[in-house]
Amino acid sequence: AQSVTQLDSQVPVFEEAPVELRCNYSSSVSVYLFWYVQYPNQGLQLLLKYLSGSTLVKGINGFEAEFNKSQTSFHLRKPSVHISDTAEYFCAFSGNTPLVFGKGTRLSVIA
Amino acid sequence: NAGVTQTPKFQVLKTGQSMTLQCAQDMNHEYMSWYRQDPGMGLRLIHYSVGAGITDQGEVPNGYNVSRSTTEDFPLRLLSAAPSQTSVYFCASSPSGGPQAGELFFGEGSRLTVL
Image 1 (cartoon, chains in turn brown, blue):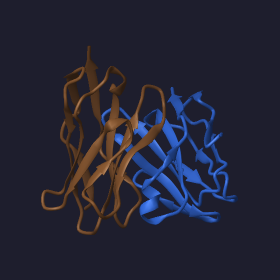
Image 2 (spheres, helix red, strand yellow; image 1 turned 45 degrees about the vertical axis):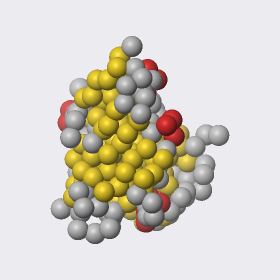
Image 3 (cartoon, rainbow over the protein chains, first blue to last red; image 1 turned 45 degrees about the horizontal axis):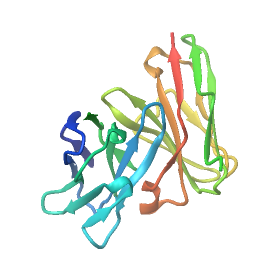
């Protein structure tokens, strides 16, 4: 069965510190990987995506993620977070099925 | 730019009542979908459509119906509301299926409470 696991439900981090949000997937077919962000009381918006090519992908707001096929991971990173990055982040993938989401990681940036 | 528009934004129903959540997009997207979001559960796919006249079930379709008579509209019907359907519902669209179906454009959500 295809699935995606976000290893941390909540991540608190101080402002200007680096952050990594972890995501692992399970699939027997080629996958396409995504990170979405949801700010309070809003819909989700695409942060970045991996479809093919370079395994390091850059997204909006200074975020980047690296696709690691051998470890079946797609971790999201930012070298220095801001208060405005406080939100919920969702990892998702599509293979031969519609988009499947992880359960989300709530990032709280502390001043 | 309207994008994906959902109505209503908030709704309270009594158990057994029926209602329709409306979703419209003005981007000429072929792919549309409905998700529900529950605390600690992420987003779960209810139904999706790859084009007008074509719909399919997602992970949690029970209790919901959809139709796709036009490219623009994809309404979600609750036939007989149950408290377990209390949730936030999101409609999302994409230019096409395949990998691009992961590049979803979301509406702002409809918060439904069933008493």
